[in-house]
Length: 110
Image (cartoon, rainbow, N blue to C red):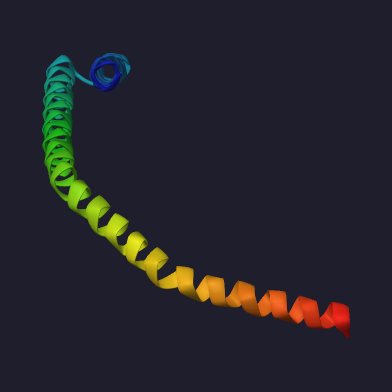
């Protein structure tokens, strides 16, 4: 999809620039020079776009590699933290449930 966009951008730039230059009221020499300048500019823009896309792909590859290295460790640490929290919270939750049961019993007797 990006290749189609880049191709369309380049072709559109060239066609638009050429038509604009050919329809402009200039001398033949000035028109040809302007056309050459527009083609050069379109070529440079296309090359810049290709460089940017390549840099983006390289960065994406680096990100994927980094993520594949970091995510397993992060997952393990998170799992360990969750297990520790559960271990610490279970006695407290049991105590809270006992207290709630006592309060309910006292309210029913009350």
